[in-house]
Length: 290
Ligand code: KIV
Image 1 (cartoon, rainbow, N blue to C red):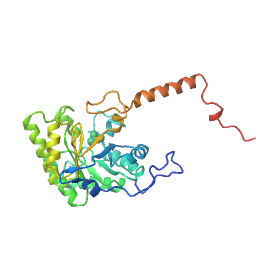
Image 2 (cartoon, rainbow, N blue to C red):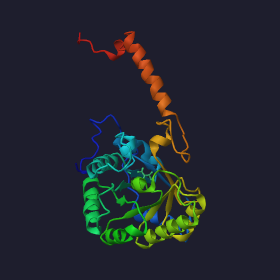
Image 3 (tube, rainbow, N blue to C red):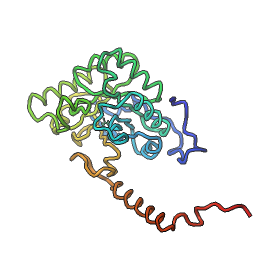
């Protein structure tokens, strides 16, 4: 699938939103943090589909095609089984549905850890097939060489430190990280290594707040928090969590809506009307032309 397919507004149900405009760039995101200060926090949300991208695009600086799509879209138990094919297909859809935000695509587990060369091949495929501006990968010091390899070859990389969900089998769960002094030091050192390697920004996920503040003060690139701190340079949430599509969400999620309840209520109304034959009415029915 190629991003050269743009959204066909004559066949799609969705209108372009907003009107086509110049897209933000990775350097523009980077330059929002000046001398350690980000006057206007960066806004990032996840998107996996063209329509959701259209709806979120006007409100965001970055759209993340997260590998959380494994659980949210595919009902998988973790992000571990997510494939490069899934990321490319959803990444291309999100690029087609957006005009304004920088689109970043997650590198799935197993597509980059083997070697910098493996990471380059996977990242190049993602950028070619989706039209996204950059990739995100998980890991700290151990990934620094790979991040440097990619950035020196023209691939913008967003880091991801703290709770790294692809490592769930090693971590044993999704609890907040950095409760011991040793682990806190390791996470801060990981973040420094990721920044020194050339990451243009980094996600800090699921850490006790002082760690997020220490990293944000220590690194020149913007930090994007999730379960981290309001003092990060920006924030990200999984959109479906934020909109209340799931009953169970982590403590750090604020549910701005109750989409699950809303969908259930309207599906029940539809089911009632079908069973009572009160839908469709003449308004939704075609008649032969007189
Ligand atoms: O996959 C994802 O959605 C993420 C965010 C939670 C940061 O990595």
